[in-house]
Structures are given as structure tokens and as C-alpha cells.
Length: 68
Length: 338
Image (cartoon, rainbow over all chains, first blue to last red; front, side, top):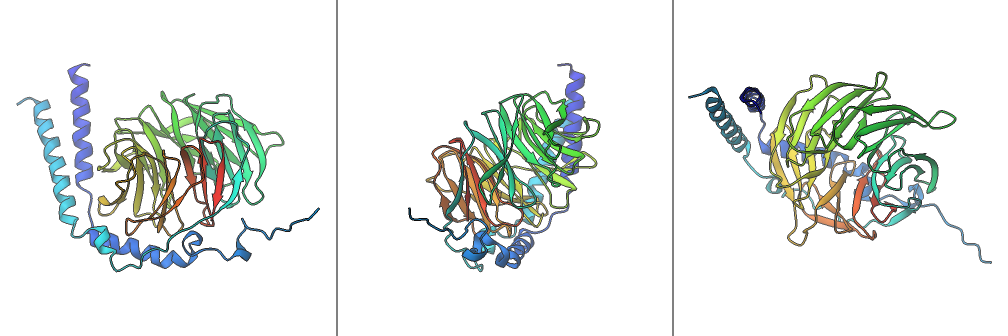
């Protein structure tokens, strides 16, 4: 590999790192609070969390057994 | 000092700067912050459907936006479209190459896509009288690990050639190539607002990309092996990753760092796949040890397990309405649980 392409590659790495370094970061406490709020606000609609009443569960139909 | 040496120093300085900035934002950890949250209930889900029809290992599945149809891909060389309510097969799409690794359903329900070791993403129209191949997206120089439709005209792909790409389905050409990973790209997930996506790769990094300008905006470190699975958290502010290092992690996009690791000393199998319940509270993670473990995303605790497959769980998916979770396995079956 030519030293030129190594240099180009390194320049790109530095530019990328500069971009990533410039991100504005919020505090973890804020991030955690927002995530919790989202979860809790939507919890009642989350069928896998709170369950589905058998009558409204599309994957559970009342089965009839035919005795032959 | 030569320019190369100078830039190496600058790169190291920037990495240190990023690490310091992340530390400065780390005023608490997720588990402590969630100590006031009531624990999630013990989750006990039952198998409601076992979908039988594939003749070989299932590698991928994806729900349609109608919450009822789903597509699955198997190395028996077929895509099967299932009606999850009845358990019936609605369509079968024979594949030119049986080495399939991914499948996707378009949001419209009109199209499905598949791809794998043929390095191509093939798009099929389900609505024509006979299922037709619409396009073969051929430009990647490595296997296709994941594909997702943005619409009927745009597809995102992740490849073993270390790139991701945005394709125009009308021309069949790549509109944007996302370059930055140094390992095979294994998975991708679209943000809820469709302006960005995240990718996971064998370089153990997860990256956030802007779809329109093609730039990598953020890189998330922490995993120590291939990232096989990735998903946006429903609100769009966080992502969950699953790795061969046997852990899942949550990264917050705005705090730009890892918030929590989901791990257990007893678990020493890699994570193959993951899906989130619709509030984000539950993470369904498929492992090499044939199980799908259920994690409380806020507290980091295991709250359940889906056992029933006789081989590796290779794919998991929750439909948009969150009514159930589907697991697909190398045992050739798909199971629907709720």
C-alpha cells in the first residue's frame, strides 16, 4: 500500500474523530430519566409486558373440540 | 515530525478527548437511576403458533406493518410469507441462491427482499399475479447480512464488505455508500423518524449514520466481539446491541455512551438476534444456546426466557403493535409467543 493512501486514510480518520468529538452530550441522568419516562408512559399499551386478555388475543381463538 | 506521526498523535488526543467528555456526562449509571422504577413482572409467554414449513435452518424473519403477515428466510432456498393469525403460508418465493442471510418486508406490504452469500439484495413484488423479481441490487463485494426498506423505492443494506448502502429501487443503483466500519457489517436498524440508522459490525462497534448526507455521526464502543444484532429503542434516543461476547448493551445517542450491559455469568453463548417490546421495556434476545432470554431494559435484570427451540435462535421480531414476539430457529421452525 502506498504511503499516500495511508496518509489519506489517516486524514479521514482524524476528520471523523473530530466530527464525533464535537457531539453535544447530555448527562446520563437526563438520558436515563427520559428513557424511563418513555417506557412507563407506554407500559399500559405493551401487550408483552402487561398481558393480553384472552378474548382480544388474535393468537388465541376459542377452540372447539369435536368428539368423534 | 512527519505528517503521519502528527496525525496519529492528533487521533489519539481526539480519542482521549471523547472518552473524557463521555466520562464527564456519566453522572450516574442506568441501574441506579432505575432503582425507583417498579420491577417488570416475571414474563411468562406461551407458544401460540409453531410455524412449520421450512426444510432447513431459518436465518431471518421480518414482520409486515399490518401486524399479521411476516416473511421468513431459510437456507432451504425459500422465502415464506405467513399469516401469523391462522398459521398458514400465504406465499412461497423460490430463491436463486439458497445461501440467504436476511429478509425484509416493505412498509407498504407490496415488496419483500432477500440477500446472502450471493452478495446481492433481490427485491420481489408480491402483488403481481405471479411473484416477480423487481430488481437485483448488485454492487456489494461481500455477503448481504441485512436489508431494510425505507419505502417501495429505497432500500438500506449492510454487507460483509464492511459497507452499508442506500439503494434506489428504480435505477437499481447505490445512492449512498456508508464507509467507516473496519469489519463485516452484520446488522442495521432504521430510526423511527427514518432520518438515520445504526449498524453493528465484526469490528465490535456500533455506528450511527445520517441517511441523507452519508456521514457516520457517532461510534459506540464497549463490545469485545462481533455485534450480530442491533435495534433502535422505540423513542429513538437509544439503541440496543447484541454480540458474540454474550452480552447485550444499551447505548444512549444523546449521552453518546453505553448505559447498561445485559449479562449473566451463567450465559456463555453469543447473542444472535434481538427485538424490543413496544414500550421498550422488554428485550427479547436470541442466543446460540437455543434460548431467547427476556431482559428488563431499564433495570438490566433477566425477567424470563422463551424455551422451546431445538437449535440456535437465529432471529426474533416483534410486530409494530407489540402483540407478540416471533422467534425463528435453526431447527427450521418459527414460534409466535404472547
